[in-house]
Image (cartoon, rainbow, N blue to C red; front, side):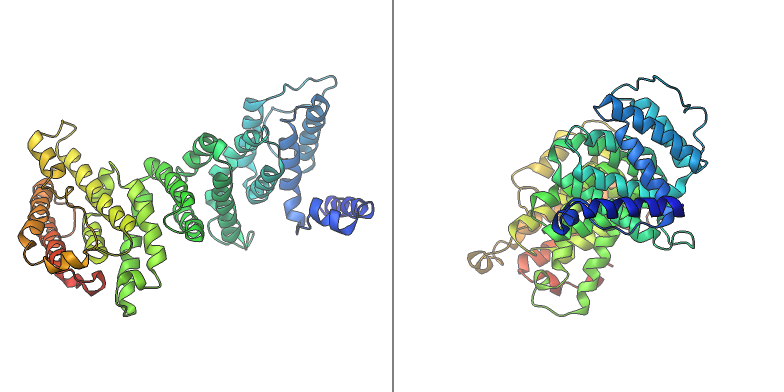
Length: 423
């Protein structure tokens, strides 16, 4: 390892002597390479160039791959053998995938460095090479779950794993033309790695916070979350995360919850939750009390788009519960019209009361209360037979939605709502 490490540093130094300082800094940025990272770095160079359009370069990369495997005693089975006059095809996808699958299982310690180098190469490669990089990175992504905690052998494992996930999110945002490649070769695989759930959620929210709730980038991040949540219900834990975040707002008194310092993060969580709550019966059944609490506390908070987001979340939950109760049968016309009709809950979405509405709030209380009371009754009927939750959901849902209706007619600030009213 030490000899290879010194050879790489020597080559970099020789290169720098033939270029100006500025050009060298731009072309070959200085990166800290530890001796333990050398195998992963060299392996990535070989794998990357095995997909080159140049036939001579492909053969050289194949021979380099043989040398790396032999030098570091890596186990690839009987896949590699040195021979003259070989002709490596332009896209040896299955061959390289078998090699990477075997190496990721026999030498997982190279995962962090190989993925880091692969993502760095992704940013500098031509467009036709980028799908190739995602292809050979797939087996290593499945191994990434072993590095969610720092260990003696990998003291910075968690931070490097977070950096890799964050880089994947940002690359996805910067490469809209590769939408399906990322969805199929990255997020669908990561969703199966249970150990990465918390890391992926953290990084998705972190990157979304950089752009804000109502941005195109956050909507794309919500789509990434929908992809992983569709394959792994553990990502539904975004609901209790949002509930705890909303509960934390009680530590600081503000005139309205949208003025709280946690509001930008709450808004981001709401946009993400809107996407994954559609037709998600697992989320609706398991986290209905949390949804009721969130709805009560965030009623009429923020701009119109955020209010519409909250309304959409509630409607998604109602829709999911209705479909579950009907066991796949088509919902009858009575139920459908009560949800979507002109006088229904959906026909009176949550909105900020204007001055003229406040003046007539008392007069219209009964009209506003009716859709919510109707929704409460529907919810109670849908979950009447469900007993696996911790408390009486029928009474809980009825009181929660009725409480929303009464608060709506009063025009009070959401930050003044009392969580005890849910009990």
